[in-house]
Length: 467
Ligand SMILES: [Zn+2]
Ligand SMILES: [Zn+2]
Image (cartoon, rainbow, N blue to C red; front, top):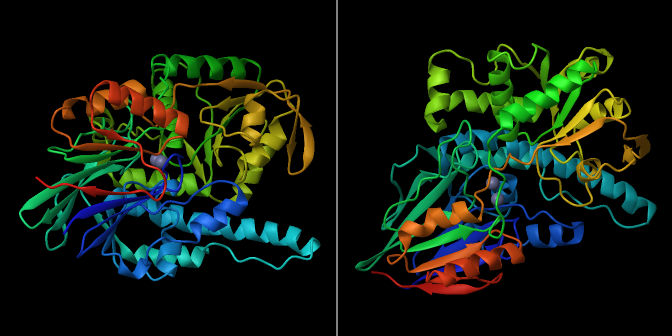
């Protein structure tokens, strides 16, 4: 009755989180993330599951990010019919994020099929559609933090706050095998200490084994100090020039974090009152989920919320879903702040705002998130003189400012602090969710400090020992 782990996805890379924990009686899937990469790999990896989806007893979902949840609709399409156990906030976030992902899949395929048609190649089908995603929502089963949930005889899960995004968890899986109990913590992704809105990450008690993320396994973040002051400086100098501040932002967490800081700047009168627009239907839907889940807030946010302080600016900030209202912003020449998605400027309404504002030196484009190689966001961050938007060249004349102090991931030191108390008692740490170089650096650090650490490769299987 040995318990085994099969490392499937986000192993020696960052996206497509997925692992299988099984024994003779049960199969538990940990996350079902979308692998994001080149198109060919994307279809090959995401459309194939190295197990029978119909045989899975439960899926345990750590959080709503698409690299952890984004292949769920496809899993359901392929026969999965069990419960998807997660926190209540993650369930609610997924009910907007997965249909949005389905929509993106459909749009992507339309574009690809246009090219394929010209080349005389057959049309492709999307990985899943918006309807498939909506279908999959019926299997979600949301729970509060730190309450044990029974999956089946001898197997349970408890969600501990991971402090990464709203609702994020480090699930602790407990498996009784005859007289043994094995306790496995799943720490992908891990948040930072002292970031606004969220609690600091919690380490589950009495862990035997742990999956550990390593996104920043070899790097340190700049301290979150002076975030407010820097933001105020950027806003004030742009307003002096009579310009607009355009902020490309991820719809989940980063948008709400920026809004939280802006609200404080207004309250403390560090910047003049100017209109702020969150222009992204997904960001608006996700912000509504934040309002419904105060149980996920840290103390400061909770107190502000309870005392009616409106920390996410529901009254002050204009949240836009309607496309016509979005277009009206182009004609409005007042200084203003526009926060819009997609975060890396590859799609979405941000493209229209960039197109309309990028050639005016009075404006500022404020980069607050990671910009991957070969994205428009990266080209702007690198201050290319000319950038293409919707296939047309534009001169980048707006000021570009970059703030690196925002990150949702623990860095090398923070990860180390998180696992330090486990020394001497933990039986195994599995390094996952990182580019190889980052993972290796974390592996070396833990090895030097005498942790029983492993660095699995994709497809590896490992047998766990009980008490
Ligand atoms: Zn994440
Ligand atoms: Zn992740």
